[in-house]
Image 1 (cartoon, one colour):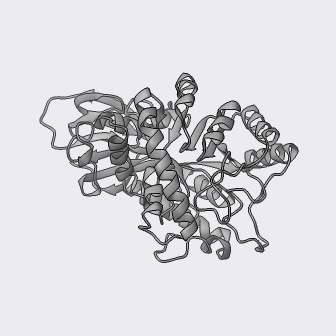
Image 2 (cartoon, helix red, strand yellow):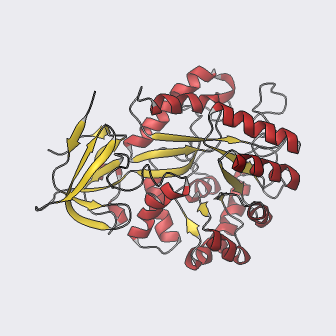
Image 3 (cartoon, helix red, strand yellow):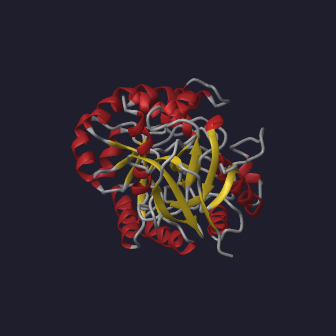
Length: 397
């Protein structure tokens, strides 16, 4: 059934600049026109936010243990929780998500959302390729028999990339350092050999997939840049010697500020090991990121949200943290969460801007968040539209 609609006159910010008073029209999930109009708009409209780094495979039921729940819950049931998280994110203004540790659980949810079986956001999923006892493997207790796949040779890496491609992955995630929440490792641990990483990146690029590299160390950034990955996740170890390459290649970096602050400050229940690692990460990050941002390193919205440490909806707070941490204007921060985030995940021709032909993913809000991002808060969201469908609030008449 064909669906079409037009907003009343709104203040329009199109993902890059203020357009002024205009009406937004859309049909069958796509914007058909953004037409200038006369009037004194009560509300504003901006593109839906894009979070380039989330993890949806956690319980959407409050109080569940985030480590054990995925181990004891069947995949079919978990996929429903993925959809619930995705819908919560959309209701809070995040109309596109990229899950960076996918499996059949997220692929099933992504297909259901894409088919319109459930109204909700766009969902991209990357398949992980990591080693035995690496960051991606150490969320599962040592003797538990049902483990996510790992790859321990160049050939195994190529095979796993191909398996993820066959399953429907949009991209691949690799690890070039240890992690904060994984059990028993160190942030500075090497994850896979150069030959394994080279094989993974080569195979993913040969199949047309982006490669996102988790890294918390300077050596991890060295490795990621040497093998020409497409994005850095966390990027804690970025040093001045990396700036030129990052800027020249325009590599996007998801800084995941809120989650590391929360773990370091123990705002949420975590192990002593995780809190200690996070404190070290935050100290290094704070020393490195200010100069990197000032130099022009490309930071985009990426939160590591999983519904526990960072809730789906906390993306609004992450943007405010980015503005402060990087000494940005409100508009620069909003670009990092909309048009530039879309460009970073190859959705330039799909979403991230209010432009005829692109997806109807937008927020109607009180205030003008491109002038003052402090106004971009849940209580100021009037309506959220994702894929042309109202997913939260009510469109003004």
